Length: 105
Image (tube, rainbow, N blue to C red; front, side, top):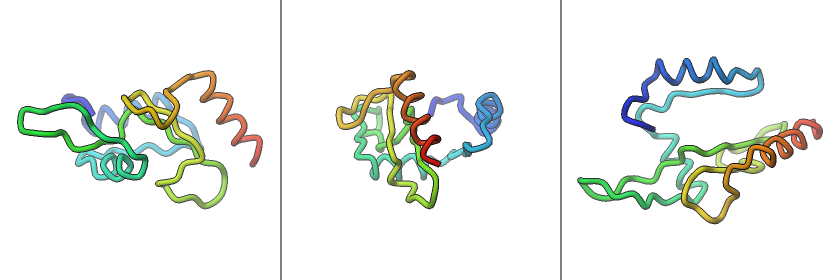
């Protein structure tokens, strides 16, 4: 979501953060980022020279338990945004919650 981001950088990041149960995607046109912003209730508050910046879900961490799920409904999520209706990223809490999901499988 930064000006220098591109597909090659996203692929490299995905390789550094490789996990067989995780899937990494490149969303260059930000279709998914806008879709998830709406689903998660994220609103942008950052002004742009040409007007309001569209809402994007970025710096969000979504976790899903086993079984079929709607992408819009993670079992839990955390963020690094200016929202109050979901927990801010806390690595220890994230680890604990993911372990709970894994134990339930």
